[in-house]
Length: 534
Image (cartoon, rainbow, N blue to C red; front, side, top):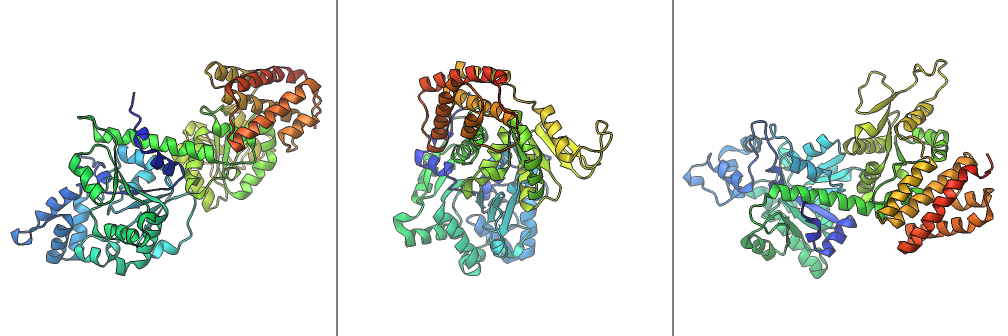
């Protein structure tokens, strides 16, 4: 059983993560885990200094990486330095390791890095995760896309030699040469909690920026943290002298730092996505219930695409899906704070029984959402609407505008075909199937979640008899021709669900179990009840 490293974080630092306030500061320690095809790895900061020193004679000895890089530039020039950094860092050779991939899976909305390489970017590309890099000051004015991770390359990279911060002159002139970038980064450091991962905080410009913030804001400034997989007393003391609080995840000897970080990153992703789900809001109580339960019921269908396509789905098949006991949803149906947008979307997709990706006339926002889906969703749960009949896609495909063998007269719309694909993939949610799932939750002691699923099932059955008109749960109950003795129970269930989903008031276990059993009894009798057809 793996260690719960997330639990080793101080409670305050956990809260900051769950509120979307972490600012990960990723250093060379993470890039050093990337691997080339011949198993070579990029050097860490200390090893990079030694590698560069091989090109310097005794007269140009160095006291560290910055000194060595500065001496190299003084002797050979700027462009040869850039070329040598590309070679030593294996820029065109390394691929992200599993550790890098696990870091990339965490749905942070912003990441700060001092690395010259592209390991972070390559990790996200491998995951199809959307991101926006900022190198230098020119991109600062660009409109921020809420569903893409912002990557701030504080020291530039080797593809942008003019913005690269590597030598003593670069560091000394950073604040005056890039005042807008320094202000932008300072704002991130002020409004968020810097968390150092694989970063030593040796860089003078970064420390100067922290010192400036501390000098101006005093005790009101955010204190940086560093996460160490393992740590010696001297390492901990060095960070503490610099005003950085330290979390050491593993104290046992002989434990692999790579495995510690991999497990820790997985736990961070789960915690952040779980927090986004618990904090999300929606006007659809059935959707909120599906986001709250630890184990989803398999009734949620997520639609991604341009506004025009989503509007057609809403009108054409959303009501029919609800009548079949399913919960159709788009990302706009949930509201979350901006820093948790990506985590909310990722959690929504992971919990979906099916995901419809409609690539027709998609806008930039839809393209980003589809990118997140391709990095998150099992292809077997995808239904892809693709205007190109010959395109290969990683899931179920619905070819647009061409009749298939079951549509001899070409009368079926794309929406009709998507509806059929969904029912083939997920199937309608019958009362018997729901009853089995609810009973299983009760046996496992999940009384609140059993209650929520039972209410959703009742709502779906009522809606299946009321037709396509959108109505609230209370309206469905009031208009249904059901025995009067059922009405108080259904109204009480509606109230209890609302209190839990919107106010966080959880019903006592005994009450939840009692209500669930009553709802199961009603659910079993609904098919025989005479409900009005619409």
